[in-house]
Amino acid sequence: MTGRVRVFLVDDHTLFRAGVRAELAESVEVVGEAGDVAEAIAGIEASRPDVVLLDVHLPGGGGAAVAAAVRERRPEVRFLALSVSDAAEDVIAVIRAGARGYVTKTIDRAGLVDAIARVAAGDAVFSPRLAGFVLDAFAHDPGEAPAVADPELDSLTPREQEVLRLIARGYTYKELARQLVISVKTVETHVSSVLRKLQLSSRHELTRWANDRRLL
Image 1: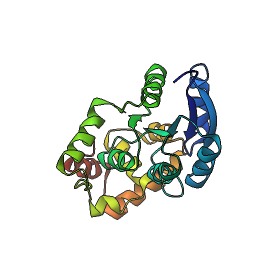
Image 2: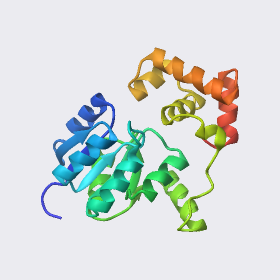
Image 3: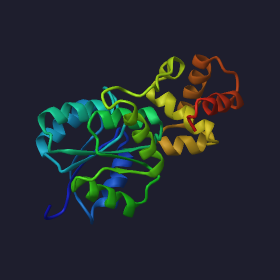
Image 4: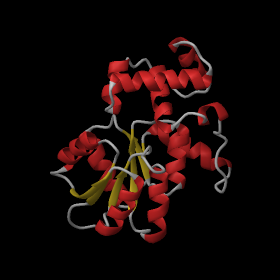
């Protein structure tokens, strides 16, 4: 591939998109951005990027829905998931939908630029821990989804699952609010909903619940 890689950003947080755009400006050509599934599909169709940086949890169906829809019409477009989540079910879902790689938002600028270039060149890019999820899943049966279903976990919305994992890892409400670009009050609302749905009464019980399911 000659010239700079053409990148389309998909994330429901405007401030995060602005930050990524600024970080990547000298290394890639950002040709568009979107904050939900419908906007992303239309924008990718119109701009025809080389690589789409794709968040996993989006309004309107999630990142997997974007990748699956675009893959049917534009199979040449490559997807690199960029998410706060490092949960096995999120990684596997977006890879099954067609993404070529998955990195978390803790990645630094140099690492992200390298990951974009490698995906554009046709490589698959994962951090070692996330690569293990993919290998384990597809080693069982490449035609079947891995056994990651959990009715209790599935009762939570994608955002509640993010909050659950971060709280269980020891994040304070303020740290979690900064990470997800939401208010502390919204964090408190999500935590209350998680505890109610899982029938738990404290942060300690929540952490133990997540640890028992290897969600940390």
